Image (cartoon, rainbow, N blue to C red; front, top):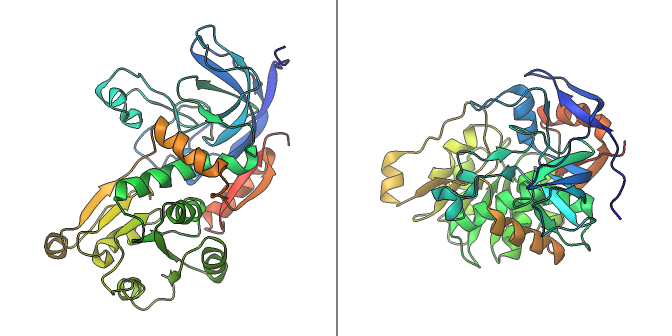
Length: 353
């Protein structure tokens, strides 16, 4: 028997670019023919959500907007064309809410590059509400044994860094530097790297983040960019042969680290850019980049297969995102902490309060 779906729900809504977010009641939407309605229990809070509030990116958001794209919950309704989901299944609402499934990119499993992709919490309403719509073909399938609060950050942060590590080409036993290691993406990147047989150097600032990275997340070295006299030298010296890491995963939220990474990555190394600091530019010395045969590339979010693989790591218990749970009504306070750079790990909001 299908659960009773209410007419109204609580949500965090942005009425204008720049915010603030407003906690209020809005109508519950009905799913279209190819959509499911997910009763969101928990949603991770991502730096992208703050970018959406502030209008930091050259891509306009819908307004008014319900943000959020790391929503974990239960299927409570579905459209008439949906036949591969059951009421009560656990489902995740990811950044890619839907795509055309027919363009060149979709046909080669690059659906994040689809020009018609729907973006949760950006071009369509996302998971900072109690009931959220998602395209059935793109919603993440969450095994029933998974904790919904714990898996929420995996739905964007986890999938994104897992994809970046795959794109880096780093092999088991090699070294990867994670820049922005103490944040939501960085904390997961260290764990995925370890699960993939990689050794990690954490780059961030502060004693709390150092303790977390070294003691909980498995990094063997920590470079504090705020106190270091020479970040490039310290990162290279942290590798066994002094030549630098085989890959650098950039999940930082400011520009400077993007302009240093090509200097300390080892010859034939790969710099993977994932973080999206507002208005930032990449910079690399041409001579060294050519002589060292350095690869610099961007990595966006994972496709549906990447998502399933990232979730499977979590199901097996090898990924545990450090997170704190607060009520959905406290979202603005989380944004304030994020703006000040005072978050270690990830915040998850509970939609029941």
